[in-house]
Length: 267
Image (tube, rainbow, N blue to C red; front, side, top):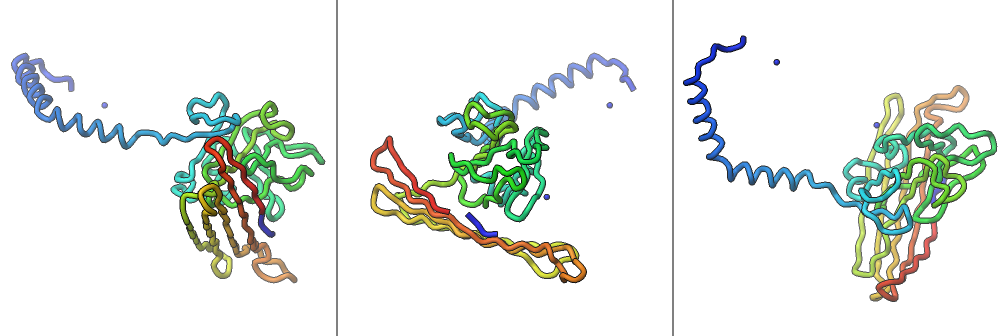
């Protein structure tokens, strides 16, 4: 993986008749325009359909029989989410406490303080692979939310589907699959600064997808993050809580038939 915000009016009947006739005229004239505006409003308010695999089968998010919040890739980009720190502010019931560099203590619906030596009550999964630590101190990796198909946050006990370590819930990071349809690439960059901190931090993410014939492809990402510090410690210098992180992942996908596919990932 990686290294390590309301006079009542006098009654006049003839006025009522005039008003009614005037209202009928006004209502009748722009009827077609109103229908067009209504159609546009319905189009603008149509919800994006998100398909999730939280139950190990493809289901529409609105039809999935568990408490779940999911963000698609477009929503992740639109909201500017790039790591779990910006993710938790967009998911109701999800809370986060930063622990050691690269790891985080995550809770859902307040199910947290775990006893010393026990694992986290919230499981983390990259696709279907569990990630993170079970030592009770360092929990969730800071998985970069770049080139993801979606993020699924399952709330409440998930032991039936995901086993031990999911008493509070589970977070699933679903990556984009290698695509043999054609060459593709993307680059994203950002800068950041904090008051009382020297210099600018940055984050750079890159992705490339390369087809290997008609039935295979390879997809890889690289990322680099440099966050400037804020705390000055006597004897140690300024901005001592800085962080730097680099990493990546590479996935090879095989699609020999329409009903079978296999993926190998290294990170």
